[in-house]
Length: 162
Image 1 (cartoon, one colour):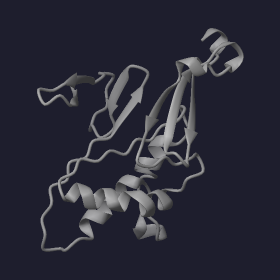
Image 2 (cartoon, rainbow, N blue to C red; image 1 turned 180 degrees about the horizontal axis):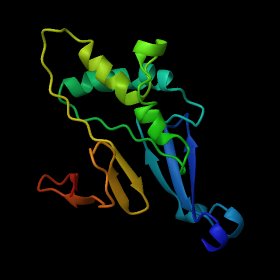
Image 3 (cartoon, one colour; image 1 turned 60 degrees about the vertical axis):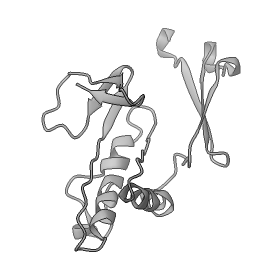
Image 4 (cartoon, rainbow, N blue to C red; image 1 turned 180 degrees about the vertical axis):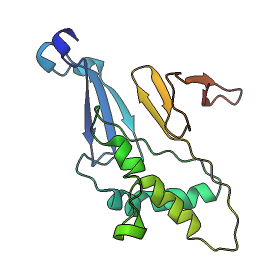
């Protein structure tokens, strides 16, 4: 907005596991008539710890994924709020160095490998950053400025494509 004021606001309800997005008027006033509400299986607040999210939710998502159910972890926040750090963590800091795993992605992979060592799994993981209209693949070996895009597939689902 003019003068760098935000034009959109976000409110979350931890009890109802909902998130509301709405336009903001002058001075950051919430414009409730523009609000759109989204429901999730679970919503965590800004003080949430990776350990708690893993123990309370991600372990069960891994179980479901290994049974063939698609799962999604959505991490949202303002620029520099720690979203990427929450998911990926600190490079080279893992259970080998300090007894605690770094990011949520490392915890998910650990859960898969902690299964029966005689079982074989194929795990497909995508990690995207969405900023304004730009979708970036955070696992791409050579990041560039090429934005990915969403397309509706023949199955009716949205797919991220080059």
